[in-house]
Length: 209
Image 1 (cartoon, one colour):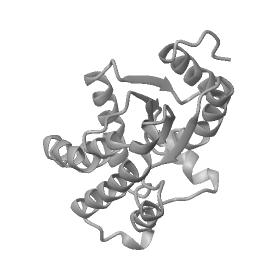
Image 2 (cartoon, rainbow, N blue to C red):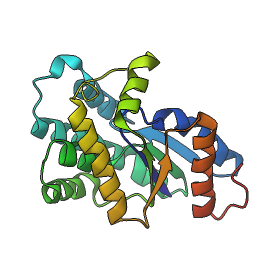
Image 3 (cartoon, rainbow, N blue to C red):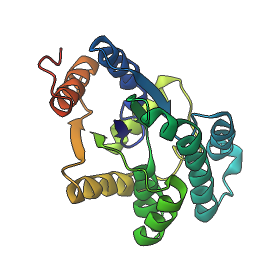
Image 4 (cartoon, rainbow, N blue to C red):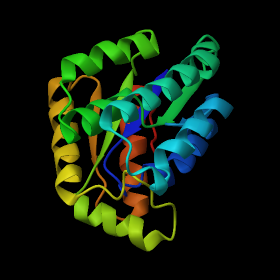
């Protein structure tokens, strides 16, 4: 099964993912965790370019193609082989990030992006996507105060991030059978419980605790 975690900056995906993976392993599942962009040696090199604050001259079209290149490598090198082994893949961001950030954020036509995404991924779609939803100002403040990485995309204007959030909500509304929305503006343990409840229902487990 292929599960993706999506959401605006500072929504808590990266913090919640390890705990969620540990819980799934305790339920007896084989789990692989990864992130986008990244997940392979080549993809991690592309991630460094995309996030570098020195690259503020990067144009949206360049940004899109670099994200797609990193994703194509991850899909072919890691994801497709693992999905043949009954492994659950938990991925921090995937193709929907391109639609939200470059589509709704930058205003690139969604039809164009979907064609490019289909080529880059070979049509690989998540079975389940969980949206970590929260106000973008709260998320950006979390990022600033966390002491972690502050990258080139974080530094975009607030209006950009607001368009991204609206885009995510629009994408979730289009495919309610694939998307589940979790309120990320809650204490860590409550968000984790909500995530487990979503997966328990998806995987027909009796106890999400």
